[in-house]
Every structure is written in C-alpha cells, then in structure tokens.
Length: 482
Image (cartoon, rainbow, N blue to C red; front, side, top):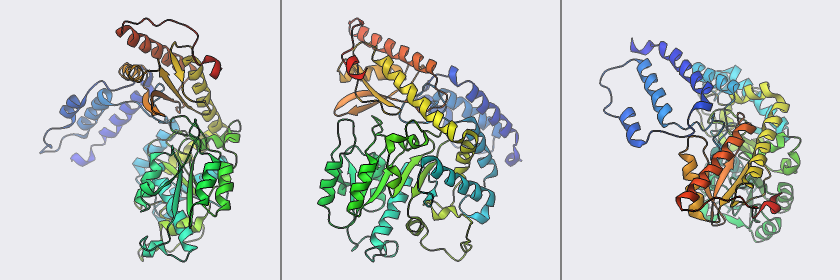
C-alpha cells in the first residue's frame, strides 16, 4: 500500500545528512525563482497516489534550488537566525518520529518530565527566579502574548476584575509602555490581547536604541491605573540593551509589571563574561526569548518565563474541562503554560542541547558569536567608505557605505545574489544600512574573513559600475570605533 512506503524515511535521512554535511559548498541564497518553483511544486493535484520516495526526491530538488540555508548556513548573517546543533536536529527528528503530544503529562510522561527539567535548567542558566514558571511556545510573539496575558490577569485581579471570564469591556484600563524602538512582536501581542497596538505609551530612547530611564519615569508618572512596561535586551538592529535593572526599580516604584523582550539578547545572561550587561534582569516579572536563535535548536521554539506562576497558569488554562485529568502535584501539564493545546515536543531539543553543551558550552557559543561580530566590525572599518552605525555590544553590527542609501542597498543586493554570504538591509534613524547578525554555532573566523572579502568586492563592483574606483584611505569612523 502507498501508506507504508518506509523507504521514504531512509531517503529523507540520506538527503538531510548530505544537506548538512555540504552546507559550506551550497550557495547561500536561492538559485531558482518563483516561476521555476511553481512549476516544480504546483500543477493539478495528482489524481492517483504516487510513491513517497518520488515526493521526497522532489522536495530535495526544490530546496536545493529555491531554499536558503538560514538556520544551518555558517555564512548566513541575515535577520537574527540561529543555527541548528547536530544533537538538536537529532532530537527533533525523534520528536517527529515519536509524534507524542506534549500538552498533558498522561499523553507522554517522559516528555513532560524532560520539559520540566529543561525549564529548571533554563532558570538556573539565565539566573532567573527559581520559583518562576516556564512555557515553550512557538516563538517570541507567543511568548510575549503569554507573559502579557499573565500580567493582564494579575493586574486586573488585584482590582477585582476577572478578565478571563468578563473580558476587557468595562475593565480598568491597563497602560502598555514600550521603547520607541521596541520589536514589532510586542505590538502583535498587544493587538492579540485586545490592548490595541496604537494605545502603547512610547518611551524615548538614546542613539543606540536603549530606553531612557528618565523618560520612563515621566511616562509612568502620567499614567492612571495599572501599567505594563516592556523593556528590551538586544535591539534587533543594534543589539542595544535597555538598562533593565534601573527600569525594574523605577517601574516597581509605580506598581507596574516589567516584561523583558530578550529574543536573542537574554542569552547574554548565560555568559559570565557578558552577564553584567543585563544586571538586574532577574527583578523583572516576565521574560521572553527564542531558543531557535542563540541556543541553536530547530524552528520553532520560544521560551516564556513568569515570576508569578499562579497568574501565568490562570491566564492560560483558566478552567479544566471534565475530560482532562485532575492536576496532580509534581506532574507537568504543558497546556497550563502556553496558549496552544495540541503541540509537538518542541522543548525536547532544548533539553538535548542543554544536557550536551552544559552551562560552559552555552556560554562559549554566545561568546564566540560576539567575538565574530567584533571581528566583523574591525574588518568593516578597513573597507573604504564603510561607516559603522552602532556600538557593538553583542552580536549585531550595522554598516553603511558611502553615506548613500542607494549605494548601500546595491551592495546588499549584490551580496544576496553572490551565493557566498547573505546579509539583510534595515533602516536606522532614517538611513539605509546593512545588518550583520552572528548567531550560528558553525560560523568561524574564516567564515567572517571570507564574508568581509565578499563585502569589499561587492563595494568595489558597485563603485566600478558607477565609474568610481575604490581607493584605500583612512576610514571616517575608524578612530571613533577603535
């Protein structure tokens, strides 16, 4: 029968391992466009069954021509896309093969216990309160939603309002406060929860994108009623870190809940060398980060931590229907900590990575990425007409070429089509820039040097197309960033 085509599993394994072992030889970008991919993937739905091996062969061809090795490619520096450690991939393969729902303890006790252990290890690794609750949603958007739902529950319950039962109409108003350069996923979460993204009170930031404590105090002083302050560790462009300890102290003076968007930057807390950058972060009320970024596990896996477990649980699983087993002390039901009910065991690769790397290995991974970013910054300063736009504090650096938006975008486009390395564009305070993000365990100093050579060549090519020769001279901002 067509259903038991087990040979497709062997073929998928062979293609997957070939893909992973050959990453350094693959183009860092797609070679096929939409038209070619539609021809390969589309057409009328087959009327009759075909072999699973034929389907897997087609998928391999399609991804070879139209995929971009974002998560595993050592020279992919676009967005903030982590790599995938071999042990995490292996664990994720087993998660798919086992296909055991991770929502309830009695659906898979082994997975429930592994998730509980992973949660405790994360609290220990990041220095967060040991009594805090932990959930594993799809990513930071749902982690923000979960944390802000817990905040909404607690703040309104203190005012005798049951938001899970009665909703927001007629409820006391909660003010959401965020920095001017907060990530868009914070706004997604406030929209989904009914706060309305347009109602956020905006706090001024400094030139690096850090929230200004004096401006926060002013906004809080003008608020009436409960408030939630959303701070940030790791601006998606500059990597800047809000002064979270000071923010927590100020916000708590006013009785506000503090939520930390630490999508990638919170992992700095795992490094003894970088932990000082996030001093005071443990005093917040909730935290969100992505394991599929700096921890290098497969997509998708976020982490939400809440310092008020009862508010967390009440916001997620307010009532247990009769067909669910009663809560048993010591048994973890994941549906109490995340919005989704039926879900895969996405926490298992986290457990596998933490057990394999240990605290020292995670710290070394984070520190190596930061060192590679500093190497990028130093090399970029040696390229004529390159201007760095941010102070390098973590794994992010922005560069601009020739003080020209179009020139900068032309260099980015040339690099994205080079097949050698991939960088994304952004806009920083109204100026176009190329963003470099280093979060992959496979990236070496050699990869950085190869990418720097490609950048220099791309700049020279763009200059030549305009009839201008690229000439070495002291860089305009070398002294500033030396």
